[in-house]
Image (cartoon, helix red, strand yellow):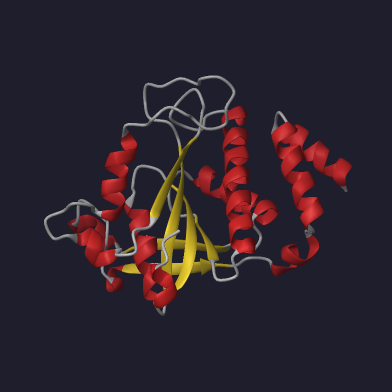
Length: 236
């Protein structure tokens, strides 16, 4: 991870974000966090497959190179633009990690799609929780602004079990700004609103590391939400 933050007054953080067709929700969140004293050093985007692909094998995430990654990376951070926005906005060079769910279609349609997305959220969030726990200087954030409502809901639920230390957030952009701008990469401070969402502190106290490990294991052994629910009852 980039060491730029060590010499700055900003607190380093990791951002996990659900992402649909508007990458601007990620850059808007990074800008808002920076304004609040956080330097986003790593971004994990949870996304659905592009149109025209089919599920390949049983891996949770797609493993082949996705042609959208370079384009999304440029759009997310405005790399190589005429105004040199990359170096102006993000001189510490944040890492982008792209997690594309391995399902049959570019949308969450049935219960199996939704459960696989929940499993994907669990895997990424658990890894980020470990990183945050091992580095006392890092803060973890989960943005629920992008993608479908079901994606945000599943990521939100997964965070309670597998990343209880992460802080939750949402961003909105004013109606006038949306109507007058084709792209919403970096809306000015007065045109955006950052909302920190409540996180139940009680869960942090009740979920021991052993319970979290058992829950994660049950999540990947389960075949459906019903199966996962039954396995939870067994754990309790």
